Each structure stands twice: as C-alpha cells, then as structure tokens.
Length: 115
Image (cartoon, rainbow, N blue to C red; front, top):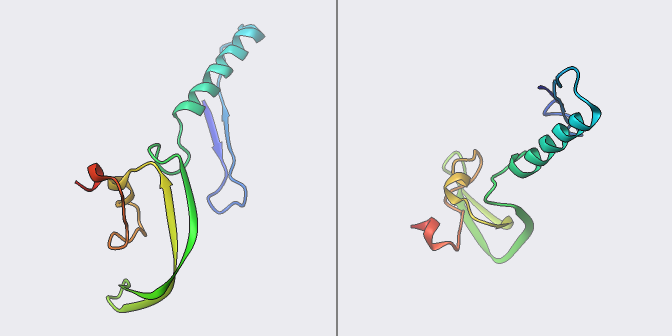
C-alpha cells in the first residue's frame, strides 16, 4: 500500500491510500478488495483523539466568580472566562497524557475512571 498525506500545516487534511492490487484480477475482485479495505478503515481507524470518546462539544463557561489557577511559571492567574470541553465517553487516563491538558482543572463524573 502507498499512503500519501497532506502536511500538518495544510488547511485541508487529506490522506490518500493507494493499494497495490495483484495483476490479472477482475474488476469485480478489485472492487471487493477496495470495499473491504474501506469498511475496515471506517470501523477501526481513528484519525485523531480516542476511540472511547466519539463526540465532543465546546462551550464558553463564564462564571460570576473569578477562577484562580497556576500557569506554567507557577504564577497565580485570575480568569473569569474558561472554555469547557464536554465529551461523550470517558478516557481520563489517556486524556491526562495529552500535552496541554491541565490535570488540576480536569473533571470527570466516572467513578471507575477516578478510582
């Protein structure tokens, strides 16, 4: 198989998969192989994120009270405006390993994951 993909900085992300098909196959056999490949990719391939979290939504959380937290330099930051990412599904252990996730401000309602 030959896999060609666009640069990370590209506006539109494209992945092209070109399978090497055996010579002498009929069109029907080639189409069957391509359909099987497409089905396998759709069922088992995650482009970004985690399979346990199929959907996310973002909202701006404007609180009446001021939230205080520590930034990367250890200084106290006061913030009235926060972005909240809500998920369908839980993968707390995996999410905590992602660069940029603030573990001090991450919440979950899954008792099993917290345990």
